[in-house]
Length: 65
Image (cartoon, rainbow, N blue to C red; front, side, top):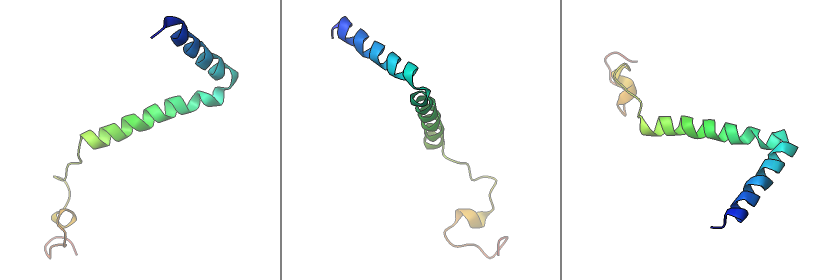
């Protein structure tokens, strides 16, 4: 990959972002959304503190009505 082409692309992106701040906001928003989704996908929720009726398909007759 040519250094001049790479630097031209970086410089073009810099000028685009400098010209409009609204182009910069989605960069940070999508990074935050990706991090939150990654956190939920990699760590499944713990069900140890929920009543049994929330875990089973059909609610049990003991505890939850």
